[in-house]
Amino acid sequence: MSTAVLLGLSLVVIGESHLADPTYLIGPMHTQLVQKGAKVHSVGVCGATPANWVTTTPSDCGRADRVNDAPVAVRIEAGAATTPIKDLIGNAKANAIIVVSGDTIGSYKAAEFPKSWAYQQVTTLTKAIAETGATCYWVGPGWSNIPGRFGKTHERVQALNSFLAENTLPCIYIDSTKMSQPGEWKTIDGQHYNSAGYRAWGSAIISALEDAMVANPPKKAP
Image 1 (spheres, rainbow, N blue to C red):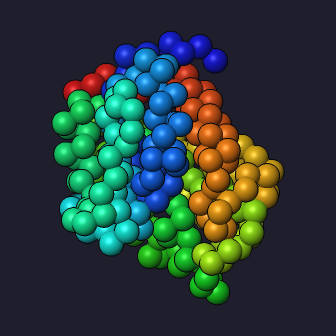
Image 2: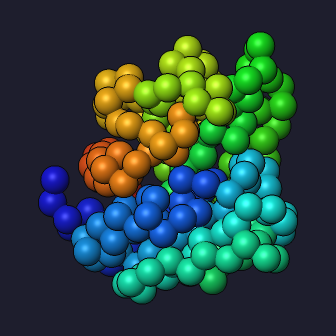
């Protein structure tokens, strides 16, 4: 895939804990997006559910923030919070928003997936994004290799991705389970990948994102 599809774009990337540590996606994926010519503001807030991005919502486990070619993401814990998505998109004059989210609504230890609550969470965010006019791409969660302390199982990951694929419009959905085999990418705790896993996931997300942008090009920046 040519780098031209990303060249010159202004992107905002938001997510939960998978973006909230310098060694996670906010490291390798952010770097690759910048290397391909995009202007990128990535923000990860540990524990953030989709609806938490509509208003400023505190986090008790940290936030990481990275802009363009800054070498290291800035991580804070005291006073960590989300930034409203409309502010992030407006400040960056973003063509597109990339949402990496799903694990925080997976309710992995619950007997049943709470569809009604999850629907409210997802649509609260997609409505706010739609009102900005920015093109949206939503990346769902990948496989775990062990249930671990989060209880993340293959069956629930499949159910969650199926739900997100049907309920994230107008965002274009990117299914991370199509990027690897179950258990292929190793985790440190059943949910967060090791450094090799995050590098592989980040590269796979960008490849899928480029394909999605060819089929559904981002709108021009406002």
